[in-house]
Length: 281
Image (cartoon, rainbow, N blue to C red):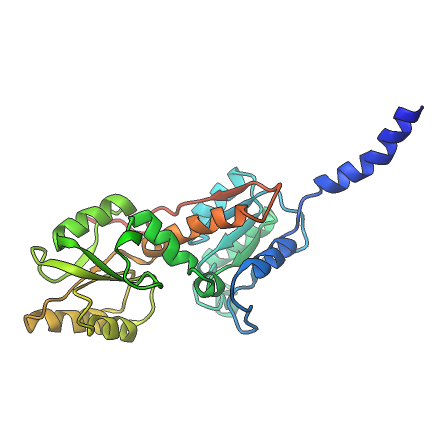
């Protein structure tokens, strides 16, 4: 009888302990674990789904495209943490897509599978260290060459641009990259500009004497490309290697996955790598 009463008393506690967390609770933990103040004006908000629903699993990704959402469902993950927008613009404004078949099908898939999507962009960059740069430096094994705390400037052994390109293609799984400059040029001073910080920031960085080669995500061709081509034509020792937006930041979300595992417990957390979002011929 005493054993029976003990089981009856303990069982509710066990059931309560096993109750899955909600996306809302996980985001609260994220806010407590970043090293920066949480901003009121931010894109880091829920983009879809019910934040109070129970989590079965968490999928972390760079782009929450259809293929990634399908993989998340296959992994039994209903909470997706993505670095970039879900609905094709920075603020995920969907009014103009109200009759767009691609948007409507994606939204239906999210609703049908009861997915909850949170964007984690601003604050992973603002925290110390910047999680995206930390992940990329781990992936590229460049931390040993960093000459500043931010991980944007490096002093490397003398290297040819073409050898850097081979290294980037291998480590990032790229079919191709875009290069401005002489592939045979040797350099020691390198800069990293992940994502799409804007042409003016690229140009400001390339103007520095301690940046001979920039590895960048993406840029508009009438800004960074134009400036870099003019610099090369003027016989300045400059080159730019564009690896694309996804692969210039994606290792940061893999880093984010391990970071989350440090304080989100009893929930499966998976990193989903994006396929290349275009092919070359």
